Image 1 (cartoon, helix red, strand yellow):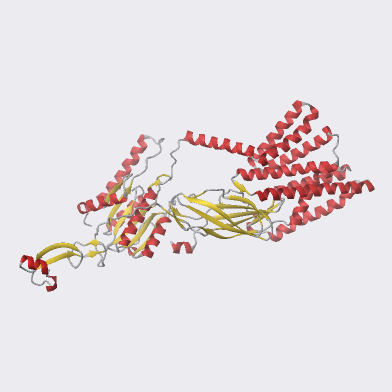
Image 2: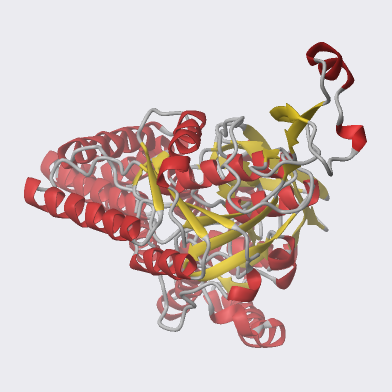
Length: 220
Length: 415
C-alpha cells in the first residue's frame, strides 16, 4: 500500500502542467504543423468565396475536428476529418476554382491521405513513441507513390475517355478492384486467422504479467 | 498474435470505390479523380504485401542482478524478411523505469537489435514482461500485432548493510560455528582458569600457568557452536512511500541477517507469511544464501485468498530454531503464526520496523486508534513470550542487533 505524499492540489497542478506541456509539444511537432496547414489551406480555399465570416467558420470547424482527431487518435474522428477535408476540397474545387481539372483533384485527394498519415504519426509521438527518421521517409515515399499513380491513372483515363467519351472505362477498374478487395476481405483473414485474432490490443494497453512457470518457482 | 485491416483500409475503400460509384452514376470523372489516390494506396499496399511479419527474439539484459538506482540495458532483436514499418513496445514492471521511450517506431529490414536503457528504481525480482510488435504495410492498411513474453528476471537488490552482530545462541547445534556456547569444552573463547581436579585429562594442564602458580592449573574454554535461525518475513502489507516502506526494511533486514548467520556457519531458513505461507528449509552454504536472497527478492504483497495456509508445517522447521521475525505486527495472520510457533517451543524474536507516518489527511482519532491497535498487538505477543525490539527510523540494523544482544539475556523467557 504505497501512499503518495504529494497533496491532491499539488498532484492536480502537476497533471495540469503536464497536460499543457503535452499539448504545446503536440502543436509544435512538424507533422502536427503540416496537418494544421493542410486543414487551414482547404478551409480557406473553400470559404474564401463566401466572405471572411464563412471562411473563419470553416477554418474554426476544420481546426476543431482536426484538434479532436489529433487529441484522441480516435478512428471515427479520423474518418470524419478525412471526410471533412474531401468535402472542403470539393467545395473549393466547385465554388472557388469553378471545377479543378481531374489530375489536380487527384493531387488534392492525396493531401487528405497525407493528413490522415500525419495525424497517425502525431498520435504515436504523443504517446511517447520514439519515431525513427526512416518512418517519415517510408511514409512520404509510399504516399508520394500513391499520389503519383493516382494522377497518372487519372490522366491516362482522361485521355482514353476522350477517344470514347463515356465514363464506362471506369467499370472494369471498379469490377477488378472490388474483386481484389473482396478476395482480401474474405479469404485472407479466414485462412490466416488464429483464435487470438479477435483480441484487439491498443498500444499502451497493459498486458497482465505472465504467470510464473515451474522453472521460475524452482529457481527461487 | 492478431491481424486486421486498419481504419485506413476502410477510408481508402469507401472513398475510392465511393468516388468510382459516383463517377459512374453521374458520368463525370471528377469524383473518381478525387478517390483515385485512395484506390492507388490500396492497390500499392496490396502489391507490397499485407500483414508483414516481424519476429522479436533473443531478449537480453546487460546485468541480471543490480542494486536499487543502478542502470541497465534491455535489448531485443527484431527480424523481418523485408523492409517493414514496425512498432516495438516493451512493457516493464513498476520497479523498472525506462530512461528513454519504451515504444519505438521504425522501419526494420533484416535483423536489428534495439536497446532500451532502464533504471532499477525499486527492489524486487521482475524483468521486462512483454514485447509487443506491431507491423504495418507501407501505407498502414493492414496491421499485425504479436505479443512475445519475455522470461528474463532482473533481480534488484535493496542497498543492504553488513552486519557484525549475531542473534545470540539459544539452543546450540553440536557443529562448530561462531556462537560462544554457555557450556565448557574445546573452543577458542576463555571461560575460566581453575586448579586441576581429579578426572581431568592430563593434557588439559596448562604448563606455563602451572609453573607460575606452583600447582597444576587448567584452562577451561567455551566451545564455538552454531545454531538454526529461521527468518520470518511479514509480507501481508507494505506501508510507506517510495523506498521508505515496511516491506523494504523487512527484506533488507532479512537479507543482512541471513547473510551474517550463513557466514557464521548457522543453518538459515526462511518463512514468508503473506498470501499463505511459503518457506525455504534451513540449510548451510553459499548456494543456500543465493536461494534465500532470491526468495526474499521475490517477496510481494498479494491479496489473501480464503483457503490460504496460515501456519508453518512443524516438519519444515528445525526443533532448535530461533525464529527472527521482521514484522510491523499489523497482520493477524502473522501474529497467529508467531504465537503458533511460540507454542511449539521456538524462541521468537521480533524486529519491528517503524511504520511510516500516515498521510496528512488522516485524522488524529484514526491515527490514535491505529497506534493503540498496534501497541495492543505488540503487548499481546510479548505476553506470550516473544521478544519485540522496535527498529526506529534512522537506526542502523547493526545498532538494533546490538540492542538485541544486550537485552536478550534479561528478556529471554522459558517455554
